[in-house]
Length: 136
Image (cartoon, rainbow, N blue to C red; front, side):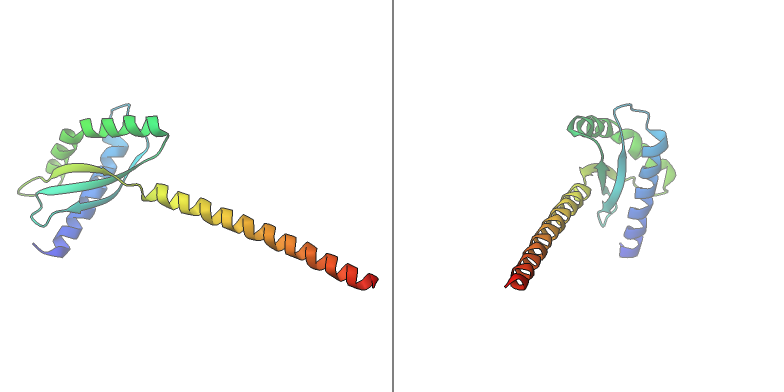
């Protein structure tokens, strides 16, 4: 199978599932869910959809259960919207890259604050040393 065709199909599935998450799924358990990436096997039989779920642990769990229960609907809709000989089997996977990037951002901000405190402390020491030198 052509790699270009697989990549186009991955992007198309991601777009269609994104639309479904926004408008078509009526399950109240599904909160703020975003399809971030899709991988399709070379034979186009299986698709893994990476989703990012925002919210606390309870909301994430409820959204995950809602997504799992909607797998049949999503696969049927993909089959209707995308013309393929076989509709791929859909599997969801949790994408934690946003959580990881948020963690890294917090660490960077913490390091930046610590650097500012150190530089302010060093500036005060330099000023104290200059004042002591002037008094001599």
